[in-house]
Image (cartoon, rainbow, N blue to C red; front, side):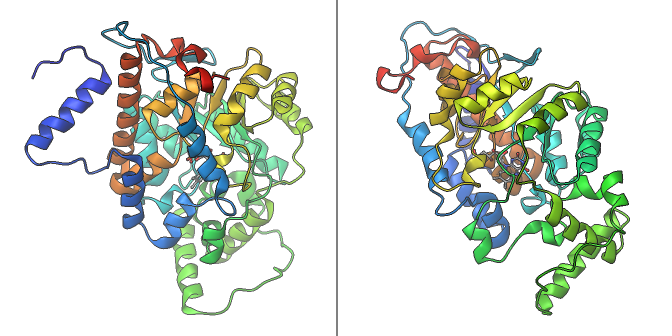
Length: 423
Ligand SMILES: Cc1cc2nc3c(=O)[nH]c(=O)nc-3n(C[C@H](O)[C@H](O)[C@H](O)COP(=O)(O)O)c2cc1C
């Protein structure tokens, strides 16, 4: 078959259709809704709830998607290039496409290889991976699996500054290109899907690998904690949870007692409700790495971030997992871009397709973070599944640019949005 005009979109399309002649269908669905549905069918109820769920009545989650529905692209005809340049500049480096993998905690809920599978997929596709503070695999192991491929580290700042500092030092040592400080999780949001199942993964020792592998956190394990206010009922389920905790402990060389202490200590210390702007200034002093602030929605916060020496902003509402009924990330984007001056602004929360990437860039984002969709790919087919999802999103982005008459991702701007949806 001859390719007339090429690029990742065209070649991917051709491959899928040609295989389809032989009756083969993609194992990882291309349609976002079918992708989520297939992952739901694969996962147990608690794991799917943790990944798919949001805060409260999940209005923010729906608003994120609705905002992308509302924005309309405005293509130009007969000006399409034969090849598109998807690359963009970020923090002095060139990204091969305006896409990063969002930091997602507890990836073992989706697949046993968890962050390691994602790290390999990111490296294979040359897409930066933002390691989560709540990863299931220590950052050093993921970094080792990535060679020279780009990685960043997302920081949750808990109540123990020495642990936070240790995380930053470790991120520097494993070649992170930036620290992504998440601002929207100073408390854990109210998440009814998890609450109805009584399910918080951290209590089972899941999603705390950065802590279990951290020398400072480990040095705290012998110190007594206040007696817990609530005790779990002594049931077979509790026994199973203990077995899981013990198995996790063996991986990190910790006894069951130490694991119980680690889970309790993590839960008591990993968020800090009074995190403030002065802490951003302190982080600025602790590291020479660029700092991206994740969770910015208000222009005044963007301006303060500039004053505090941030190097970039990520407009995000954490995928609607924190506050029910808050502003959709895409709706907040133009105001933050206008206030950010020269700082690059990234966006996540609701990005599902390549056309969504184009809309975010047209509204001023330098790049976007892909979240839940890659986790669904991971659930379905591990590393290969993440690569499929990435490939599909980039293919559609490439085709969208070509069809819109845009030669390079960096050329997208408000002139490519229908007048009614221009900022
Ligand atoms: C299961 C899950 C876990 C997440 N864990 C983290 C995390 O550890 N750190 C963080 O900054 N954001 C975390 N996020 C938020 C993502 O980085 C991103 O903001 C969000 O997924 C974007 O929404 P979307 O996936 O609906 O597009 C998590 C999101 C999900 C769905």
